[in-house]
Length: 163
Image (cartoon, rainbow, N blue to C red; front, side, top):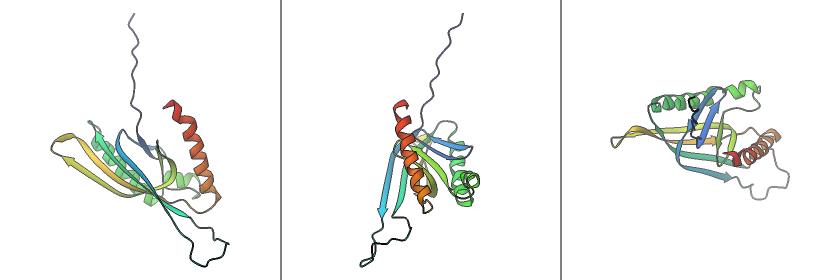
């Protein structure tokens, strides 16, 4: 009787998704989350208008490796364009949430938009395409955005021990 083998698949370091279009990034070398907070105007009263208090910028450096690297490159370009034109998530939620979904060990966010994509190919690494991307978290103002942040933190905390 033949033995059944065990095949293990690598867990991606980051996942960028727009509905059924999912782009896994397996070889992420660096990831930075920068939060820029907006200070209130001097002399303003305690009543605040419902606006975002900070901007989040996420930068990722990764390598697209193997024979599928050109497919992953095309898929990254496609999700970047879709985030600007109206995502699947936006149509499913009637515009309450939009953009892409980013899931990493650092954060789980909706309302992600691709600000820049840079691809580099080097002669010494012919089987890899290096990618550097800048992503912006642009949630719509309101309680829904904060609720999604709390839910994302809860999901990440529950799933993290299993990864």
